[in-house]
Every structure is written in C-alpha cells, then in structure tokens.
Image: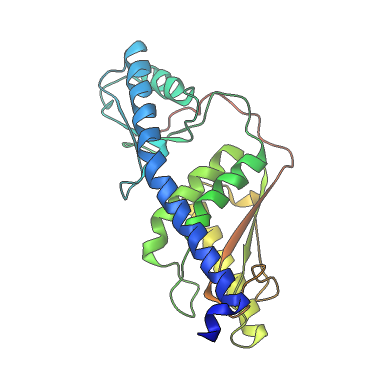
Length: 248
C-alpha cells in the first residue's frame, strides 16, 4: 500500500523498533545486573556486621533496579545502619539507597557524579517509557507513578544542580491551550519530584506547547506529548559518602 512507503511510516517504524530493542535489552541485562549487585551487597553487609539487612535491587513493580531498598535492620543501631548503607553505596554501579523503615537516603561513595550522568540516566528511563497524563489533563496517570519514582532516584545524585523540566504537546488543538497544558504538566512533575525529596529550589519548569516536536516525527504524533529534563551544573552541594539516616 502507498502509505507503507511514506517517510512518516518509515520513521514511526524505526522508532518502534528502537523502543522494542531498548525493552528487550533491559530485560536481558537487567536481571543479571540486579543479581550481581545483590550478591556483592550481601558480602559487604556481612563484612560490616549488618547481616540482618537485605538489599533488594528491584523497583516497586518488580523490575531490576540499581537503586536498592534496604530492609531487615530495624534492631541495629544507627551507627551500624550507616556503615551498612555506606558499604552498599560504595559498590560500583549502585545508585541512591533507601531504607524500608524510613526516608534515609545514601548516595554512592565514589567520585562526585557529573550532572550529565544524571541527565543520561533520566533519558535512558524515558527512552522506552513516558510519563503519561490523564487525557487533556495535567494529572499524572497512576500507571506512571513508578517511573516518576525512578526519575527521582536518578536525579538525586545531582542535587545542587539546576534541573529544568520542559513540557511538550503535539500540535493538535490551539497553541495557546497547548502552551498552558504543557506548562501545567511540567509543574505537575515538579510537584511530584518535590514529594519524593528533590529540593524545590533547584527545579525549573517551562511549557513550550508544540513548538519543539520530536525530530522526524509528525507534529501531531502522540510521541510529542512528553516531558524532558536538563540537568545543569551550578554550585553543587559538597558530596558526602552517605547521608545521615533520618528518624525511622
């Protein structure tokens, strides 16, 4: 058929193939990564005397993650808990750490992370998935909650930088409405990140409506309805090996 030979069809097909490959690659490498980090975590936890603690390298939906949830150390003193978190955070490849019985966070004890790394981490998360909103609304769809959690974890190592959140729409509908809606959606993501511990003073939002469509795609295509992040270095907070665990 004629439409199969159109440039738009070829671009759309290519985009679908990229998404499919990203998903397949993640499913192939993710479990192995999580299993490796879990085994290393078990070893270092035993070394610092925190054997009741278990590090779970999986998201709330069960997908492999490099951001572990520590549990099982309720009876340990705060000093031991700090040693456990620091030891796990020092494992190469480990991201932000969270305790199951509190809001304490730990970042990697490795060299300070460059803002571009955080931006690349977020872009990788959004390559195969999208933060979705209810139709014609700025309310984040419930199905995107876990993705927002993962974005917050990816941004956390770069606190102290400016995080720009840009909302986009497709070109359907009048542009004044598109601009307003894209700004409202960017603000909704900002509020969601604040709720997850990202400081509000480092977050900037803007909506550009349909003015910046995805290159090579039809401006009316749904892929243009998106949120983008830019992590810009300013005066980063001096990194510490591990944040002090908060109240349980």
